[in-house]
Every structure is written in structure tokens, then in C-alpha cells.
Image 1 (cartoon, rainbow, N blue to C red):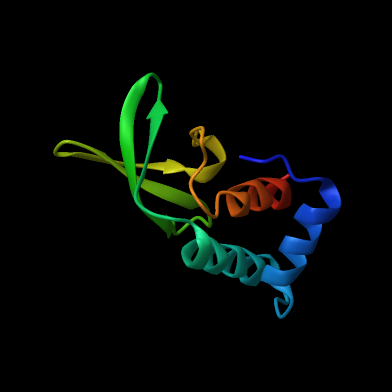
Image 2: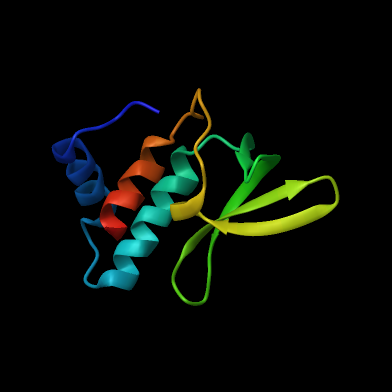
Length: 103
């Protein structure tokens, strides 16, 4: 994933949250941008195990998670903890923007 500078990340966050009035609405805006731009599915390694990221979701406690699978096994992993593969999938800069927003 190309490293974006702080100004680029903040511009992306502003684009995603322009009509947001609180943190929940900001999260929804970022989730929407991830949904629109992140190319799915993609493969990455979690703890040395190859998994396929098949989708993204928002948990009831307000975290964006990646829905991952390996064979018949399924698990959601927080986007903040998800290793982004190299080369990164199209739209992965939105993961970087979410991480910046989440601090």
C-alpha cells in the first residue's frame, strides 16, 4: 500500500465524514467508503495463516471488521489489526484512512 501523507489521509477522512455530526456517523461514512472502494475478496496472512477477506462489517460496539475465511472456518478480524498484503488490493488506502481516523 502506498504510504499516504497526513494531509492526504485527512482529506479522505473529510470526504467520508463531510455530513457526519458525531463519531457514529463518521464511522458510518468511513465504512461506506471502504465498502465502495475496497476490492474484495483479497488474500492476506493473519498470524502466518493465509485467509481470504470476503467482506467488511460494523460490529455493535462500533468497530469495522473484515469477514475472513479459510476453508469452512470464518472469523471477523478488526480492520485495525488486519495485515494489508503486498501488493495491496485496490482501495486499501481507505483502510489507512480509517486507521488514521481511529488514532
